[in-house]
Image (cartoon, rainbow, N blue to C red; front, side, top):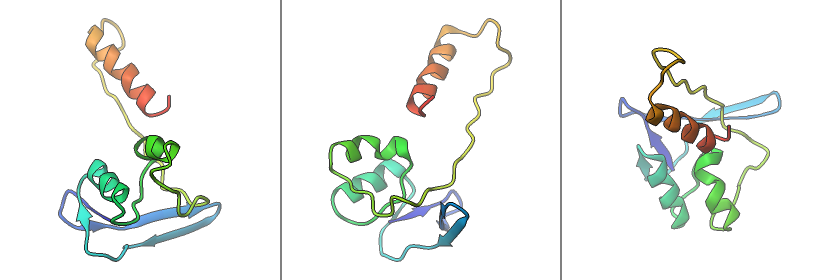
Length: 106
């Protein structure tokens, strides 16, 4: 399954294994701009999808998805949560940050 980026272009898959790197465009008729939609398409047997651990964890544990290239990894990304300061953050902001940390594995 192919991912459509914000500009409407198909994004290449970027995979790595130790010091080896591969980049390419998967072939096939299906493309979507939503990881949850891509996951659902894969769950219905409509293709192979490149998913990060948070999107794949539950279906893998339930046996509904299967790893195809277990030794390969997607690139990591850095996620920033910017606030005007650390002091006097609203409770809902602090709760959101903690929820985000939990969802992303700490």
